[in-house]
Length: 307
Image (tube, rainbow, N blue to C red; front, side):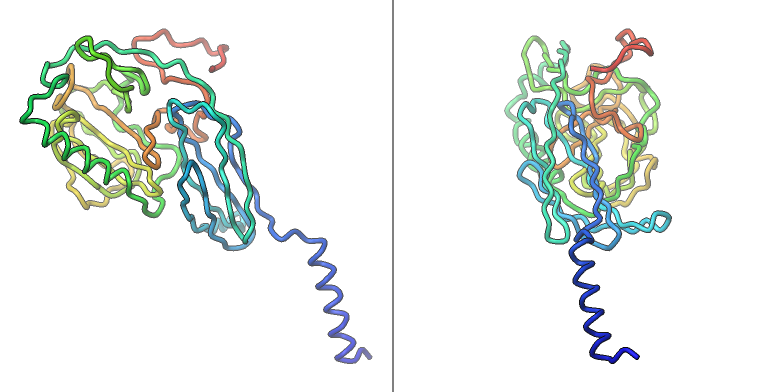
């Protein structure tokens, strides 16, 4: 018969032995090694026990509580991150959980951004003095919206806001009336005036109001700093504070603001960084290549690989 004291000693020996041979964490990480400029990318970590992960990326730190996946008996924390369209140096993503930090290097790949030459009303190139207060107000309110950090509501793939193709891709430098301006921070999509515009993901309406350059614009918060925008609308179907479903109509396309004709300007910011939203229409998303092709370009053959 084993005495209680002997049993306790044997149990302690076995526990001590297992603590040496078993890993402190069975975490599995998913982080891409290469991402093109101006692209968003998902990163995640899984473990066999509950945890909260800390993602540190480009000076920002975001805590993500893991969600249980019953079918896999694992817990997973995921996040959407982004590389700026002018990124050149390698970036490091640090993921911390269970008091351990794991670092991953993400290498940016260059993209040859195009140039768009456009003709618009002169007041949208050289705004009159009376328009300056509204422009400054728009800037502050949009900046505040992009600073929102809430619980995750996005999921891949993203829903297409309108069925039309791309007329002006993300990232191209704009030249308005002969004057160079900042790169295009969204995707222009063909659609007739009054076309229903649908939410890319479930979210909360941060702004639904007229702006000087964007015309009638809706901004949706999808959590973790993922913000989508829908500009140049002819009408709103939502108001600030509304909760919307993925695919729900948020407005109707139009030609308000700085435009050359009716279309939807669809934008996506990830922690304040504008990105090309089109690669997120598939799951897994396209992390390399670009810019997204327009209706006016010859489509590549099936055998041609992306840059």
